[in-house]
Length: 294
Image 1 (cartoon, rainbow, N blue to C red):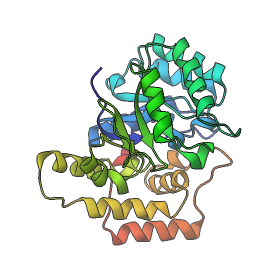
Image 2: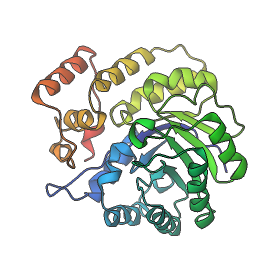
Image 3: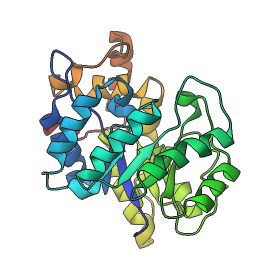
């Protein structure tokens, strides 16, 4: 398998007024991000409210995605605590020829490296054709991958464990593995990561920074002077002051009301925070085209 590289948006889910998933608008939004410069997207990651969306709606989206023009450009997040539901969801995805997955360890319970290895072993035993990007995000699931654990997983499952999204930022500077994709989870780490040999980024804010992120990525690989990285980092920092899902939905809803719909207990920003975010982005002279597709 070719090493996975590039700029990936952890794409947002677009909801109907009754808070059901609007499959068409969600896929339109993802495809718009690719048209803007993303090499692909991660569907049903944290930013896509994956933990809150019913499995039946996820399956409906996969069925529709299998007929779309960019069907091969997406990573599929599972966003499920249940081992059995994760395995079954992946089997359905595999039957539709989706092979690349982004999988976080379960949340809530406390466990260590050996239990995490067993979790992924069970998944791989049931879905051996899958290619898995580990999702390292201690803030959300309570577990942080160690360098040793990742190395052990790759040693045991070299054909299935192909990369990691590092949103805890303890791996991207220290983990060195041949033909293994490492994606920091923030634009703030993009340039440094590329300099260290990382493969790109998978981030929430690529829902609005796709064009800027791609310019930084392309300029690095072509050896050009970096003239966009500072603005990219400033935009990310503006959103980092808030819950990213709340901030992104609030920002994109300025032009498209579909993004106002968000699943509880998540919410839009308060009016005060909304005003602050918009003013900060205006001061940066930041504009994007991400809301037009939905």
